[in-house]
Length: 286
Image (cartoon, rainbow, N blue to C red):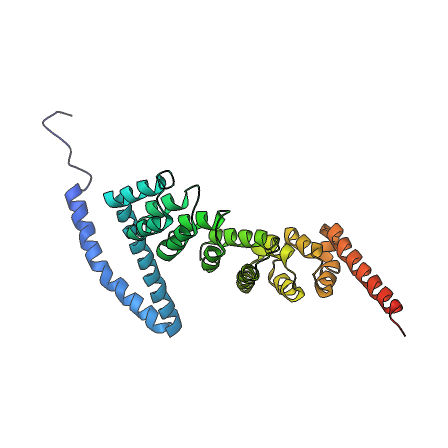
């Protein structure tokens, strides 16, 4: 093959290839749009509405995420975050910190700087919940703090983030073990506990069942709990568990086969209760 005779090109040039693809793409949207409209027209109205709402929700989340990303990049947000990081050293009053959080509420760097302080004052927590509740990472940290106030935990019981939910449940479960001298505090804890029971999930069992003193609520939780082997023991160990729950555990073929020790414990508790009732009847005056 001589240099002055080159073979004809066997591949389409980049320009021709892109031109062909562009022409194809310009033809496709109309056909796709027609099929989409027809499918939605044939579907029930509620399905079409659900799809529309889902698309709108995704769009809103994307817009919110982009807004936070842009806010994180501004010099003002970075400055606020830096001031909050050193707020305790510089003895910045909690009310002033709350104002700073409000001013930088769109930036996650601000909320994270505030929530990672060694001490997070109630005023700061309230400002975070009010202005930055959609900052998932910051809310997880806040819910998991040992100094999280009851007001903070109450405000986060309706969180859609699973880890935030679990931090709230763990926090309330631990505090329910404490006998409160203040009736108002005890009432507030009980109210939060009741709200968690209403939205109960199986994962809550290790934290809520051991501290529950209502047989009715324990029965309600048992009905909603996945009967996985690691979740049943807490029901047997709670002295307020009603007989109906213990009978179901003791008579379960799965429990008798795989966790016979738990089933045996349930039977022993039922037997002890029966003996106590019989002795009480014998002691009653005739």
